[in-house]
Length: 564
Image (cartoon, rainbow, N blue to C red):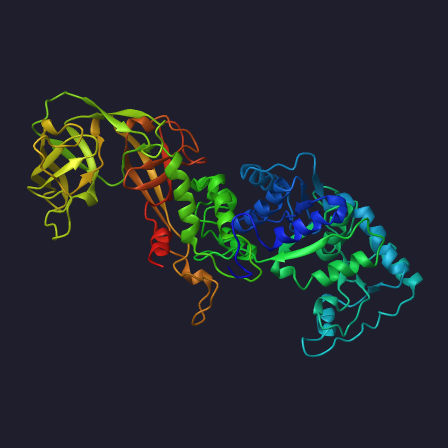
């Protein structure tokens, strides 16, 4: 096992935590937090962080706060706050009475900033954003001091107070830390701490017109809340120096330890918030909860379960270096969970009518079908069988090739839980030549699916009685991108050029077993031979069922692991 690999219960972060608890660091406490910005919907990458922070608190009898880092009112909305709380709860976690907002601390943060000015560690700068970037320098060249860097403490205090009072326009002045314009870490070259934003805040209204920057807010919010271990992704590794600098230069209640871990990168997926916003805003998907998106609300609507996502996050573990996880592992986790719990039913997605000519007219047989072979307590159900049924159109070929073992002229197959049937006639549309109906005979001695004379067939087909079928719309979802790494630019193409046009197929004439007639929103099941499906929580209505395909039955990841 390398340093980047992990077992289900042990990793480099748990090693740090256990050592701290053993030495009674932080008085033997463990306190983590999940700190989303309320400027968008959470995705599966956030699920990894949620499971990590709340999971560690559970494992080590600690606490985990939910804190919204709401410091940019131009992009934040209460809609995102509500959605984030719903996602965390759906994943199975709760923050009890530990719900916090960075905006709760605005007055304290302002006082910390004033302290930095008084101690000569911060100054008001008149450079605009472009000029600040120009003065910062490069990785190989030191930056240049701002002309306003050596203002007196009194002048800086006066200007900062006037910034708060709203005397200056947006972008005209900022408060910067006075650190070192020649620092090898560009983040430490006098970073901005406050900027002017004359925008109403979703919680504080118009009380404030200056807002603290994320890097200044985050470490101090952690300290105010008594966080012991501040866990974040590798993109914040360089920010750790500023995290520590701020806490070292103010009278902070405590000094949490920032620890970085690799973010989740998933094949055939983009997890950049900017890119997800573009997909939504430009109408490439149908909103943030589109089942093709990796958002938590999209995965929930598609039929993914919280148990599957938690198991997936446990499987991928924690690493110190970025890598890409095969999306097939996520699909395997979902399939594994649903296989144990999802009841079975038969659903014909592309129906072809079959008339069984020797079946007694008007007769209905109630056949016994197993609800879930993986669950001995799931019991059985009754599936009605009649003289007219539907089978999958793909289960018939008029001129079948050698390795096609399903139904064809003169061929005998087994109907699941029912009888052997033999195709005797093919009915076609006179104008198009399309096969529209099959005529068959059945062997009543094969009830239940076995022949008393011991003869064998090579295929078992699912079916639905035509007289008892429930009509439904079924949406077949697939991966949103056709390229494993859609973020990789190839010949000038971007991720937008790799959107999979077959990521959604809508089938509107599907026929389902009658046991699904009253299935409510969120109900999940396996359509035998077809995959796992759930009732859409938004568009499905009584009498107008809409099912989403959650995942196919194909187990690509398990096959890959077996070969390796």
